[in-house]
Each structure stands twice: as structure tokens, then as C-alpha cells.
Length: 259
Image (cartoon, rainbow, N blue to C red; front, side, top):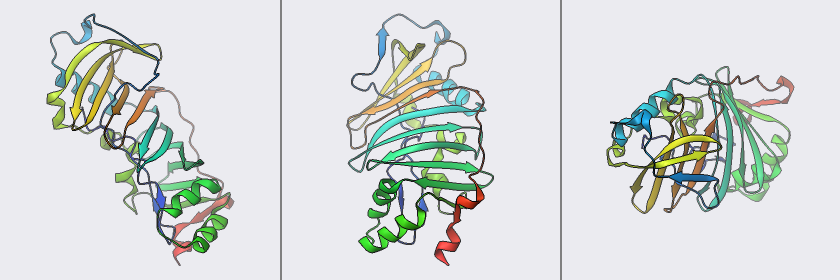
């Protein structure tokens, strides 16, 4: 189902020189998570009558690409760790949100051509620890970044590729596997009616829920099974998003850290 690369959270880390790499996660699809509030029925969905699953997925993909703004929220298991994401997207290269990793919380903003990242102590500890630095180096990084936003030009570290939330074209690229999707029954996601499309990717079962009322937006995508199960939901379609840069006095530039 469209290569909706969403929750690439597995790359969330900071290198030994505190080089920012973003998080990103395969926005590969949507599968129903345990305990989720989704109801299903087998009745046909008239807006998509006569369309095959691949055509429905393509309509959904195009609708998402045209959005001015939306919100994506979800959970994932990446590299054996539970992670969360909650991001509001306000057009290309503009977004803000929060991430949970290692018991810590991080904040991210893409604004004015810059990437900003801020985290609490546990967040930075979990991020830096993955880079194989010494405990003394890790502690120094944590102390330096406490209460501050780390800033660098967007795209300078490949972060845009690993964290595609701010580029809808990258998030919702077309996927050849859409041709193997199967059409399921009607369902509801947070009160919005939708149609399910399902598929397999090795050991992973994928499910996409497409809205059947109004525009055919993605409502939910998830992956069950496999190495990195994940679930993301979309909402706030074309709703206003207020985005500003962090206070200058609380910003530290990456080049100063590396200098």
C-alpha cells in the first residue's frame, strides 16, 4: 500500500559528535492493533464501487499529498524498543511534534529551513547511548543539551530521508506492492467511516483504512507481525497548525558543537 513511510523512528539517535539523525519509520501500511477501537462489517462501500484495491490506494495517496496540513500519531517497535510519535504537519518542510523513546520525550520542529530537536535527560541518554560513546561523553552531551534545542539546516544529515513527516511527497510515495492489496469490509476509526485494504509483506500483515466519507484520506495504517510492528492514525485534515521557531536563547547550533 503506497510506500507511506511514516514511523521511521528506528533511526532516532545522536552520534558521538552529537550529529543529529532523525527518526523515521516505514509508513508501509496499517494493521489492526490489539485492543484498538475499530469496528468492521462486510457491507460494500459505494464511493469506491468499481475500483480495485490498487486504484483505491492510489486515490488515497493523491488525497494525502494534496493536504495542506494533518496530524499523525502512533506507536512502533523499532530495534526492540517501544516508541511513540505525535506530529502535526503544516505543508512541506514545516512540522512539529513529540517522540517517546527509552522512557524519555523528545520534541522536533522543522521550520524556516532548519531542524530543531529537544529532549529530556532520558531522551538524550537513550539517543546517545546507541552511538557507542563513552558514558563520560554521553553525560557531557546530556548536560550540554539540557533544556536546549539542537539546530541545523534541514537535510544536512539526511534527516529528511529518515524522517519524512515534513514532506508529504516522500511520506506518500507510490508502492508497487499496492497491486497485491485485497479489499476488506467497512470499518470505523475514531468515528470516521472507512474501507479496509490488506496485504502481506513477508511475515508482516499490513492494513490501510481509507475514508469513505468526504475525501478518501488515510485514517489508519499499521503493520502486525514482522520485526517492526507499528500503527499510525491520521486526523486534523487541513486544520490550522501554529508553528514558530524556538526562542533564540534556547538554541544551540550543530556547527558550534562540532567546531
